[in-house]
Image (tube, rainbow, N blue to C red; front, top):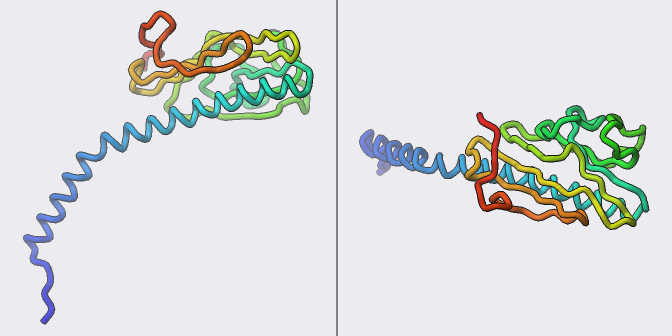
Length: 174
């Protein structure tokens, strides 16, 4: 004798499943935001380490800069669109790296804001002094979930979740 489910049993199972999905949704959304933020931060740190190592190995300056299109350095401290790593001119008046000098390109991720107090970070091979500064990665959660990548004078990045004075990191509105 075959026995199936009654309509009442199916409705109860569907209701319990729906409640479980509704309860899990905020946790899943937070996890996705954390994953997106971590992926971007890891990409930035990997680019900074790559530039630092390349400068030391090749014996010439290597630059990481914001890039609105993946072909030239940006003039603003807005890194949302992405960044490039390149050999070549490092001055702020050199918007386009020479042909063939771009070593790495990365696009920004939708929904994230990346701001810096620099338009570029220059890694020098011999003088031991690189551009120091901070990159702040924010998502729609604002300052409470923001993370900063702080690059010191010798080009070593570290991660922080507050400003140097202990205050929350500043994220753009919206």
